[in-house]
Image (cartoon, rainbow, N blue to C red):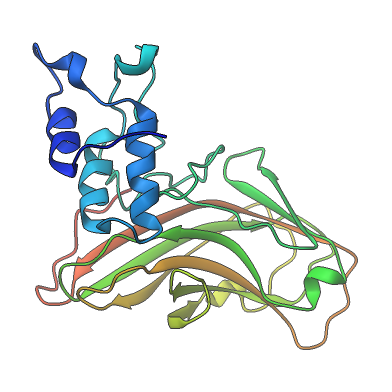
Length: 255
C-alpha cells in the first residue's frame, strides 16, 4: 500500500514544481490513492480537489518513472479548468475513483471510443430499452457557495434504428440513488435519426453550498412503450461551467 504521511506534505511537494526539491515530488500512485480515498468519503473532497488541480499535467521523477505525468492532462486546451473540465472530450482510458468521467457497466449497453472523438454507446434491445441507463458519471467537487452548473453536451445519433427515449443530466448522491436535481436535453426528448451534424445543448443545475459527495450523471430514459432493433449514439463532448448564484458572474467560458 501507499503511505501518505499527511495532506500538507503531499500538497507542498506538488507545489514545488521547480528547483532543488524536485526529487520530493510524489509519484502518481500516491496522488491517485489520495484522490480515490476522498471520492470514497475517507478524506476531504475539497483537499483532493486542490491536489488534483496541482497534479494535472505535472511530470514527476519519483517512483522510477521520470516521464510519467502525475495525472495526464486530458483538457482540450490549457484554458479549461482542470477540475471541472478535466476530460471534456470523454477520452479513454478513465482514471477510476477520481474527478474524471466513468462509464458504468450496464446490461445491454456496450461502449467504445467514438471515431470522431468522445464515447459511443451501443444499445442492445430489448434489454436496454426496459430501464433507465446511466451513460456517464463523475464526482463533483464540494461547492463553497450556492452555484449553478451550465452543462453543454454535444451528442450524435448514429443508428437508423433509433430507440425512443430521452437524455437527462442529474445530480445524485455518491451511491447514485438519491436525485437532487435533473434537467433534460430538449433535443434528446425524442432521440432523432442520424444526421450530418451533432446536436449541442446547454442545461442548468443548481448546487447547494457545502453539498458533499455529489456526482453528475447522464441518464438515458427509455420511452414507456418502444420497439427497436438496436441503437447507437455518441457523446462527443461535455463542458461544465460553474458560476456563483450569489454574484451572478460566470467563470470564464471553458470553450
